[in-house]
Image (tube, rainbow, N blue to C red):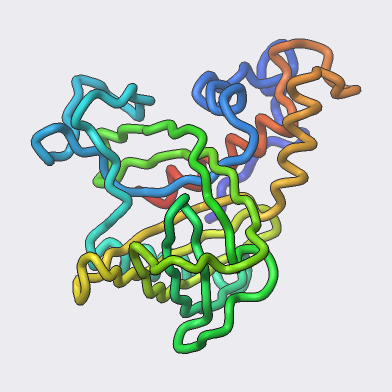
Length: 249
């Protein structure tokens, strides 16, 4: 039997709105365009991080720590089943097979698998610059996650140097109006025959996010009556975070 909520709904508090979600607020203040990858945070001995905390925690990475954006084949299969269950009611689905060549100065060239033709449109040739990372340790789950801010700058012509690394990607894409989830098996030239399994969640419309971020930072939202009142930008960030949280459970 479905849960029945009061109609009209109960006020979010005696003040009429939710208190700010402090975790989402930190992310909202920190970043304007985000993507999240799931994986695990490793300590300087190569073991998964172990901290005396009871719930998800933003960690300041220490020397020797690193985020590994990989999961087991079993986790990949489980997430594939979970995401497939959302099709077609909540998400649409497509499969892509692509070949990346990574060059000096962080330049990436993407071609369709088995073709010499460079991918048309955005993402064919780019230079990807990582601006900042926020690593989140999740002690109650088998996976952690990392939120990243990147600049992707389009490049007009392919580089002439030999690639430093190549990656063949078998990618399952799940999309709704706001987000895209990429579940990918990757075969890299530095570890051939041993595919890694990756999951990334990103905003589909960065422009919309930036507009909401501008309103949030300049506090020009016409309906905002209190600094504690929730904004559309913060709501987008919370939906983003909740999506990642549901994925890793």
